Image 1: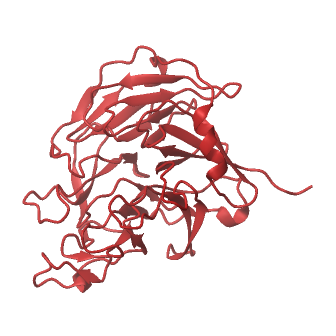
Image 2 (image 1 turned 180 degrees about the vertical axis):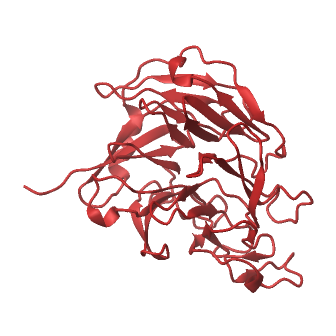
Image 3 (image 1 turned 90 degrees about the horizontal axis):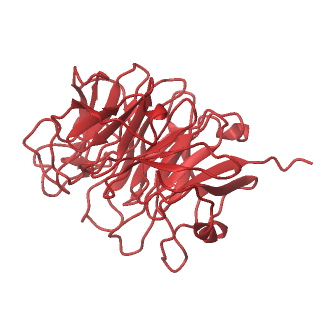
Length: 358
C-alpha cells in the first residue's frame, strides 16, 4: 500500500484548465504514474490500469478529501485495460486477460491472478488493450495493428472482439480497426461506439481520427485500405475503394488521438449534457503544430448520429505548446461526477457542476 496523500503540487496546473461556466475541476487522486484506463467497483473503489508503468492501482473512495492508493499488481506487460464485475477485476495485458477474484476485500494483499485467456498476439505496437463489459455481459476488447500501416497476416489483428467472462467463446465482431483504446454503448440505442486512431505520415491534417459505430458482426472499418471513410491509402489501397467499408460516425481532427469515452447518464450536469459523449483527446505526438490535449463533448441526435463536437476541457496544451497533461480515460461515478485520468501527470481529475442560480 502506498501512503495516504493529499493534493498538492499538481493543483498548480488546474487554473490553466478551462471548462464551461458552472463546472469545477479538482484532483480526485494522485501519485498514480502513467494512469490510464479506469473501472469502478460497487463499493466505490477505483481501479486504474497503466501502460509502460506495468502496474494496476486501486484507489479508495475519498474520505475528508483524501484517498489511499494500493498497488494491486506490477511487472505486467502494458496492463492498460481494466474491467470489473461481480467482485472480480479483469486486466488486459497485451496477450493475456487476467482475473483478480474478490479483489475489493484484499487491496492490501491482492490474490494471484487467474489467467482466463492468453492467445492474443504479443506484439507491443498498438498492443495495449481497452477492456469493458458489454450490455450482454461479455468482455469486449480490440487487437490493434502491429504497425503504422500494414496488412497483417493474422486475422486477429485490427479486430474488435468479445469473449465470455471465463475466457471462452472468442468472437471477431469487426475488422479494419487500426488502434482503439476507448469505447462505450449508447444509453438508449445500445449501439457500440469506439474511437480509432488514424495512421501517421500522410501529413499534418490527414487522415482524420475516427469515431465509429458497430452494429453487426462482419463490419469492416477500412484499415489499412481506407482512412476516415474517404482517403484511399497511397500504399495499400490497391483495388479497394472507400465505398466498400463502413464510414466513420464522426471525423475528428487529424492526430488528436481520441482514447477513452463515456456517454453521460448522470443527473447533476445541466440537461443539455444528458447522453453527450465525452471523449478524451490524448494529443498529437508528431504533428508540426500539436493539437488535441483536451476533452470534448459530442452531441448526438435521437437515432445516434453525431451533430456537433464542442470543447469541454482545454488548457492542457498551452499557447506556447507546453503540454501540461494528457487525458486518457473517462468514467462516471454514481454521484454524476466525471473522472478523467491523465497519464502524463499520473492523476485522476474530478469534474463536478454547481448551479449558478441564487
